[in-house]
Amino acid sequence: MALDAPLAALERHCGLARGHGRFFLNAGAFIGLMVISNALEEELYTNLPGFDYFKAVACLELATFAAAALLAERRSGLKTPRKAPLAFYAVLGASMALSQTLGKLANKYVNFTVSTIFKCSKALPTMALMVLCGKRYTLANVAAALTMALSAFCFAVGARQADADFNFLGVLLNGLYLLFQALQVALQDSALRDHGASIDETMLYANAIGLAALGCWALGDGELIAAISFFAARPNAVLLLAARNGTFYFAVRYYTAVVKDAGGVAAVTVGIVRKI
Image 1 (tube, helix red, strand yellow):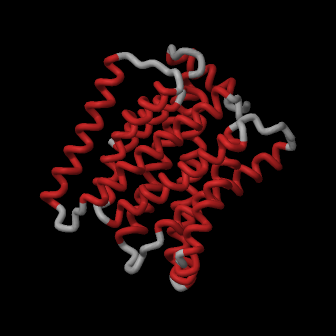
Image 2 (tube, rainbow, N blue to C red):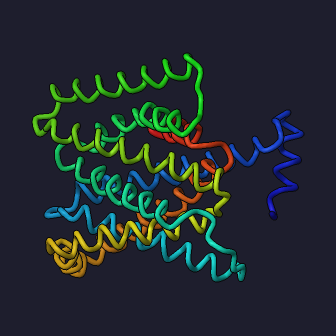
């Protein structure tokens, strides 16, 4: 890798353990890109009158990730057999499609800031699923995750007093989002670390399968066609959506690299730091 030598020099200079430089690089890039992506997403949801196409936006994300991963695999010229089972990716793709959709739908019922803070609870369900997969955590780790979850829930409940449009359905949708996100992170961790799959393989199969499932749903209820007409009449909204999608894609690549190098719970913790 082109960055191996500079990262090794940085680790020596800063007294970091081997591999920590790459972790901080990936985590920092993820946080920076997600801050930009979230700002663009909030602009899309709050300042675009008539916008109600959350499944369509999730479909675009999945399509972008799958296409980019396929292109990366083709450009690498390496034809390696699939490492993780197809059924494994089917569950990962379904959980990815559901989490992306539910997390976006929640913004119809609570404001974007409440949704973002509430998602700080992700560490607790992720740790619970990782325990089922054989991982173990200290009591201090569990207590920290539980404290974050309770704090986020209290923030959401407190927001009810300040937001006249607050609806607890948004909290329920965010709760379901957390469960499917936890499943997604646990499965990504297993694919990347236990099965030895590459980042591109994981992103290609999971996103392609998720797109097939969510695309059928959005096409069946008419939202996908309506979304195309909506954005076709608003060129500036298309540019906003493209910028948001691009920054989100690269953020997720860096996030997946953190999962591969440090594990799912470490990646979730980085995500919580980003929300702060």
